[in-house]
Image (tube, rainbow, N blue to C red):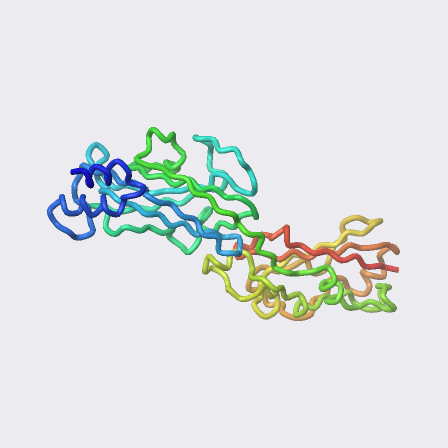
Length: 303
């Protein structure tokens, strides 16, 4: 009994062996624990950074999915508890981003490894795209079926575990110089209204992937608003006039504009007062949201 006792008292170290003991005890060695005396437990929780602001969760579980007083389908859930450098963890806090409910099994814990339903964690049914920094995820197991069960107090859960990972910055690789080179319509270096102010999307390719590509929702190709039709947003602000209304302010993922787009027609450029104008280009992630920390700006002169 010495070995079996160690397995039971130190499941973190001997979880697999304990699983095998319980599997034999229920009468059939089939990688499934049929006994209703063993609650589902989390032995190990692992987070993997995909390098595109998405994260994969993998959990090692063992136990029955319908044990004792907790009989019924057990659920595994998770929510993103801490991210972007925030350090404080509150036990019963509302999820910062959201979570996902996964049914483990209706009868017995078949198999040993669970992974998040998609390649990456999700938020509201979409890939969760995190800010760069430290991310902590709390994973929970319960036999409750109510939405949000994963955020109840720990004493009301069958099991819970935390895991952390550093979400890399995942630069897309755009630059201010690149944006300036992609503009056309200047005469003698300045925009005077003789020509349209245009942007060549073919020159706005990045060196890194679109954020969220690791989720398998988007293309894993390098960010490209032309070749891969990745989305973008464009805005302009004048030193005298403030926000300037553009003829083209961007496009969603999968857009049709893959070449030269007119930002301001020549007449609109001519109508502007002489001033400096800051043009800002922001790439979109796979969800169509702006990757704001990857924005680039270029200052041009209107005469």
